[in-house]
Image (cartoon, rainbow, N blue to C red):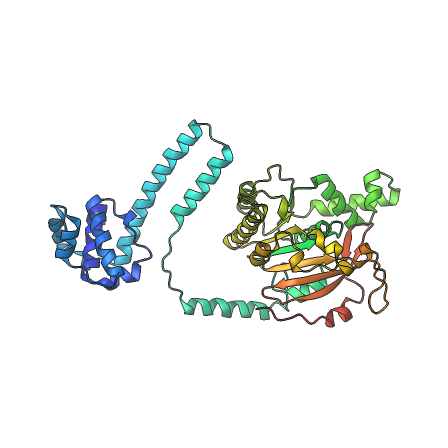
Length: 440
């Protein structure tokens, strides 16, 4: 199969002689792999008939193409030694030739863009899109249940051996017990009203992942890296965040801060201020961190500050949510995205949030695997719960959606002087009372 032209004729002869060879490989065969113009016309005529369930007829094809050389070419195809070659091998050979031609054209187009002084990120996006398209080969669009069952069997064995912890640890016993840890390919949305502590919670999840040895990246659109690191140092050292900000620190506290900084330096944590708010930039950055730093866990703070395309803000946010979910699946990573809530929640009695309070909630809810809502009754002046217990420091972590884990509410405790979330001392008793609804 050294010559593409001869291979094209063999493949056409194979398709004419045995329709099953076409149906078994139809997801791989396209008119693009036929470089010869007449061979391409013949392929289109053959495939159009096979797609309708008809058997290709030489006379019918010759008549439809109306090329004086068609009958000779068809005779050559039928007389070729196509029976000596496997159809799939011929198709893969032609695919390889087509992709090499595509790469040559890509180099030419890229050089033109560089010479035209096009935007750097436009060029990078163009290259990534084209290379992804060129590299994709769908061997079959018919799923193999044996492979699927083997994957399920391996996953069940892994879960049985993991002592209920099958994902990336969250750092909170109650959340780990409820979720089994963060799962690859998941998009997790954390919603909360202003000052609920959603950034602090997201940052805590990231820090806990990094401490567990999982490379982690934070994309911050609102706060600078110094502010975020200050929060991490505060929660690790247990030195009041305001004291650190003002510089009113005692000698024993500075020692704890130095120790906390040392711990942070040992983690694989990246804080990116995201100077460009475009969705394209974010997706490129995620790919960069995955490829160069093997990052597995990402935080986006926050969803509504990423600029996508669309005629309305709702369509824009919808696109951002969908693309984050798509890239999580593509790269086998976990993404946590923070989201604002609508102001309607503050006008409701008790101010307890629900799924409908997510801004541009419809598409965010659809794209996400898990939606968590942060609720601190103390913030709204509700100092006692229904049983009369104090709500000081109480946080309700509401799992409003859980594609694979169900829904429910978990208690956490918030130490606002350190912007730190912790498991309550009696979390086991409170957790047992939680009965997640089944999610389908």
